[in-house]
Amino acid sequence: MPARTGAEFLDRLSRNRTHVEIQGETLRGGIADHPAFANVVRTYAALFDLQHAPGSRNILTYPSATTGDPVATSFLIPRTREDLDKRGQAYKLTADASFGMLGRTGDYLNSALMALASAHGWFAQTDPAFADNITRYYEKVREQDLLCTHTLIPPQANRAQPGSQQGGGALMARITDTDDNGIVVRGARMLATIGPFADELLVFPSTVLRGTPEDRPYSFAFAIPTDAKGLRFIAREPFDYGRSHFDHPLGSRFDESDAVVVFDDVHVPYERCFTLGDPEICNGFYTKTDALQHMTHQVVARTTAKTEFILGLTTVLTEAIGIGGFQHVQADLAEIITTLETLRALNRAAEADATPNAYQVITPAWAPLNAARNLYPRLYQRFPEILRKLGASGLMATPTEADVNGPAGPDIDAYLQGATLSGRDRVRLFRLVWDACASAFAGRQALYEYYFFGDPVRMATAYQASYDKEPYAEPVGALLERGY
Ligand SMILES: Cc1cc2nc3c(=O)[nH]c(=O)nc-3n(C[C@H](O)[C@H](O)[C@H](O)COP(=O)(O)OP(=O)(O)OC[C@H]3O[C@@H](n4cnc5c(N)ncnc54)[C@H](O)[C@@H]3O)c2cc1C
Image (cartoon, rainbow, N blue to C red):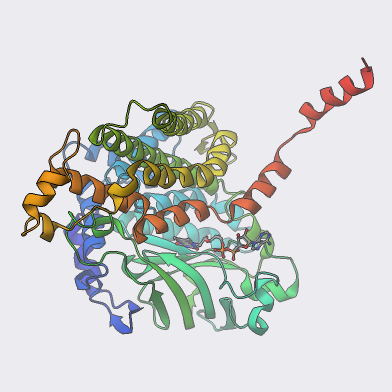
């Protein structure tokens, strides 16, 4: 089956019976029509349509190895530099469509599946069946163009204890039983973004597991349909309040939803399991397969698109109220430009220094990507801060569309005009700035970027530990010994 259209994505979603709890309401399907999801689901549908648009289909698709039909480029196994370039272009095109605001577009986890399937031999270490399972699953997702999300971390009950000890071991999703056909999973995982409207849930490893017998029930990787029996999502309050694009320009388009994942004795067939009972395989899941490189390659394209948007928005804002001539405002713009150019340079270095890995997959260089993923969680936090500082009281002089079109219209036009904009257009701009820096949607975006790759503090600890610092320490030691 070729890459799906938006209509095909919506059609399948209308047949899903996903169990979602939201604001006291229980849904069993009907997700696309629920006000919390209707807009973002249509934004996702437009991304599927982009795969068929004349200006983008050649970048976003390639011929399937099994059918020759066009399938999404994020499934393309890069055997040449041109393949890798094409993957990079497709990531950027997809990210541009949402200004980088959507974090779980299909290309993110398609890239992971591509790398995992390419490294299928690694999964055979414990059982050759796992190698077949990951290969078949990758082909299924590719051919049916399914939208995947993932859930990784255990519930946040007591971080001073390993997940396997929390709540007497009953909180974290674990294998409680097995039968001839598969495993039974009970417990919870903390979050799955887009869980309520994804087709598939990848229940993958994340926290480091010890190789002890107690950790074995928690050592697994599998995939299930989001409407699997016994699976339910508890969604957070939506930040799309059902208002117009004028009032909530970002929230009304890009609120992806995040949901707690509960496994109530979910049966997972063996053919959907990629590793079981092997902490060592779980701990090397992303690094030994190089999935991490390809996922990060996608993320850098997305964060570049997002930074471009922030730069554009800040520029329009400074022009609108005539503050572009002040030096500290220029310094803020320079800071955003520096972040943007750093991301571009790191991405370019990663692509330029790409090499074939052990599975003959052209793999972007890890050092620049690792630098980018350690930088962005912190650098992004400055963007809403800058927008809030520059927007100032304008962020609160933000009447709604109803006011602009109502009795207050003449006052708004007279008193809220900007240096370059009418009152109406200035309000429209400031509502966009507010949704990028001060609304609930904006707060969620900042939190999302901070924790995208896990806790940045622990990530930094691992980063510096894995970095070979000796070549730099040695000359310093030699200088000290030389004396003056
Ligand atoms: C908007 C959003 C969307 C998300 N979407 C998904 C998703 O789709 N799928 C998914 O799997 N996950 C998702 N996550 C979860 C994300 O992976 C985690 O937020 C991240 O891994 C950090 O874990 P935590 O939130 O449990 O923080 P915690 O581990 O509970 O940390 C809380 C605080 O305690 C500190 N801390 C805790 N333990 C330690 C320690 N051992 N050493 C040092 N400091 C420590 C941390 O530094 C941090 O400041 C999402 C998170 C957010 C915010």
